[in-house]
Image 1 (tube, rainbow, N blue to C red):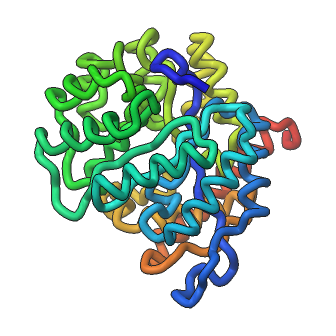
Image 2: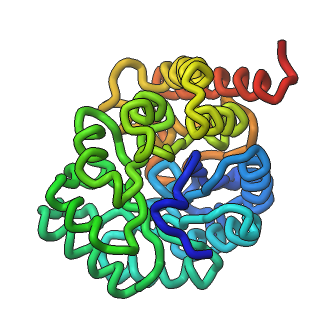
Length: 322
């Protein structure tokens, strides 16, 4: 499956890595629940989510063993079965391991790669450009979605760096964290690279740039894929009245998990995310893996309430609720 920037349309659904009941214990050897993984992917794809991405932050790329990561990536690819593009997350702490994982992911059946830069030390502008150029040189023709998360990677990718990266044909999209830089980045290179806003920001950005913002990313597809697929249909058809209505519901669902403090949420996003999936009840995601297993009770409660709100929306859009 050859994927270009113009193929990135709709919701890019980022999925968690379902865990066995003992996954929170360091003694656990094989923590991936493959049965639940298959159920999750079939549910997400069957609901109409257009692309699938794996093993980002709450997908626990940082706390899976290499063997667990590979087993999970293979399972996702085999379950997707080419129905939608699958971008496997391959972030590691260095360039060579990232490239090795990239090769393994493509061999396992992934269509592209979801790539964050190494984060032990911050990379400056030249370092960021070199990293992605090295990945593209090592994996020519393999589509890449950049993972631009300032909290995780110790800084934001600059417009100047993005403009250089946009010249690499392998770079088809970037997962954007939002905020004041979103519109600036879209204006700078959104015609060459699909800038993916959060699901909660998609309508606002798409209204401003309808020909450029043709996709968003969502970490909520394993909570409620059906309303998010409805949001995609509304945005892509430029039915702004419906899109506004659904977007208001999306933001209502998301509000409790942030607790009014985004920086605090980012510090605990993995266990809070587990609370969100638990509250939604669409899949049995299991516990998070060490060392990211605990969060303040109010944060976990906020995640669970967000999950329950997503469950309400899923029922509504499936037509099983009033």
